[in-house]
Image (cartoon, rainbow, N blue to C red):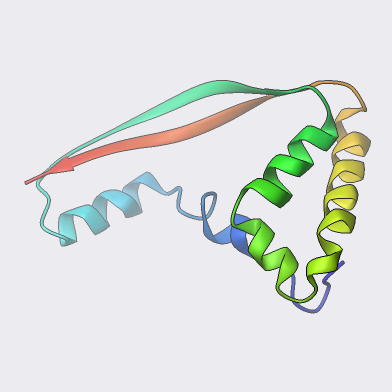
Length: 107
């Protein structure tokens, strides 16, 4: 939909900041000395590909990047995302693994 200037939200954050060693280094550089990290795996479930597409395209800051060039394209972008998800995972419920790195830091 935006081949010349694709939205980069997903590459920047939340998925672009995932290197635990780098995050530890940055916390140390910021003056924190007691740092712990835990990786947590969970399941993410949605009733349909459309639900996932709406969540990402309309319920995150990705929406701002979709609407920036033309706000009227939000629904079309959501439909394209839903179609891509359905192509990959099928048209029924989606169940996938998600992972979070939980870091705690203190001086």
